[in-house]
Length: 497
Ligand code: NDP
Image 1 (cartoon, protein in one colour):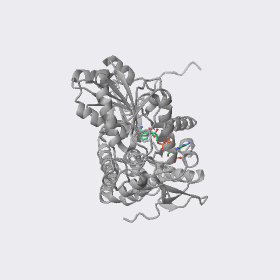
Image 2 (cartoon, rainbow, N blue to C red):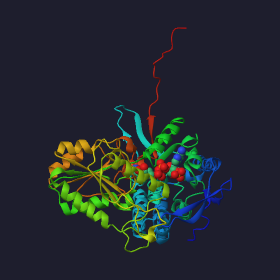
Image 3 (cartoon, protein in one colour):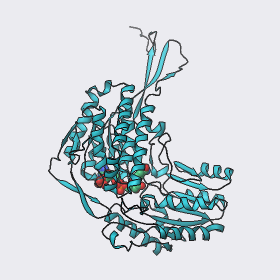
C-alpha cells in the first residue's frame, strides 16, 4: 500500500488539509532535523471530525455490523500491519528515535492487540438475570459507548493508539484520535489500513496538532460520549475536568513512579540486569519504567556499584546504529526538563553515581541525547523520588525490612506498576499483594500481554486498557426487562369518584 497524503487530516474517509492552512514539522530526535510536515487542525477541524464520527455512529451502516464482521475487520487490520510492518517500524523510529529493533517489537505487540480484540468481541456478552420472579425475562446486553475521543502521547505512538482503537472498533464505536503533535505518522498511516480493512467512512478520524486546540474539543464537545486519554497527570486532570461538563465517560492512563524492589535473597544477576532494562529501556520514556530502585541495605553497595558501572557502559546512538543500545529523548524541551530534574535531585542531597550529562560523542551532538543516570542516597521526601522524570534516571533508596519495602513502594501518588525480586515465593506473594499498583512483576520487569489488564491505581489513572476490562471500557451495559404477563400494578388503585 502507498501511504500517501498521510500528513493531511483524515475526516469522514478523506484526506484534507487543516482549515487554517497551518503546518508543523516533525523533528527527528536523534538529529534535530525535520523529517515530515503535518497539517495542523483547528478546533473547528476537530469538531468536523467529531460530527463525522457522530453521523457514522447514529446514521451510518456501521451499527449494523455484527460482532463477527467487526472481528474480521480487526483480523484484516492485523494482517495488513503484518504485511506493512517494516514501513510502520521505519516511520515510528523516525518520529520517536527509538531503535529500529524496538520499533519492530512494538509492531509485534500492536498486531497482537488487534488479534486479541478480534477474539474478545466474539465472546458471549449477553447475561441472563435471575430476577426471582415468574413471567419475567431479564437480560443484560452490551452496546457501544458511541463516539470516542482519543488522545495519545509520543513515547509509544501506535501502540497507545492501538490499545484504544482496537477495543473501540470491537465494541462498534466510532472515534476521533489526536496523536501527539511530535509523533503523528504511524497513527495517520493506520487510517489507511482501517479503510483498506473495510471500516466505513466516518468511523475512524484523525486530527493533528496541539492539544490545546486540536485536542480540546475531544473532551468538551457534547457529541463525544467518551474520552480516552494517555499522557501526563496534569493534562489528564484537565481532560477529566473538561469532560465533567458533559458527564462523559473517562478513561485515563497517566504516569507512574514505579518501585523496583530488590531483596538480598534475589537472583542478583537477573535482578541487576533487569533493573537496567526497567529504567533505561527507551531512555526511560516509559510510563511503567522502574525509576525507583528500592534495595535491601545489606546488598546496596554491590547492587548500586554494578548498576552504575553498567549504566556508564550503555551505548547511545541513532535508530539504525547496530551498536546503539538506546536512543535520544523526544525533544530538546524534554531533555531540558530531565536535566532540571537531575539537578534538583542533587541539590536535595542525591549522590550522582552515573550519567547526569549529555554524551560527548560529536555524532550525537545534534540529537536530544542524555546519559543514563543513577542517583543514590535518595529518600521519599525528595522531588526526584516523587516526580516522574520520564527520562533515563534511576533513584536509589534503601530498606531494612519487608514492611519498610512495601511502605516505601506505596509512598507515591502514583500506582501504575512495580516489581519485587526475591527467591522467597511467600515473601514475593505478600509484597505483590500489599503494593498498590496496577501491575506487579515478580522476578521480572516490563512484560505485558494484550490478554491482561493494564492501568493504574491512585493518580496513575482511571479504568483499564487491554484484557477484558479494556474492552468493557468501550461498552454500555443495558438491562432489558421483559414482562411476559403484563398486569395492572395496582400501586395507585382507582379511588372513590
Ligand atoms: P502530555 O500529557 O503532555 O500529552 C498527551 C497528549 O495530550 C498529547 O497528544 C497532547 O497534545 C495532548 N494534550 C495536551 N493538552 C491537551 C488538551 N488541553 N486537550 C486535549 N489534549 C491535550 O503527555 P506526553 O505526550 O508528554 O506523554 C508523556 C506522559 O504520558 C508521561 O507522563 C507518561 O507517564 C504518560 N504515559 C502514560 C502511559 C500509561 O499507560 N499510563 C503510557 C505512555 C505515556 P500535544 O502534546 O500534541 O500538544
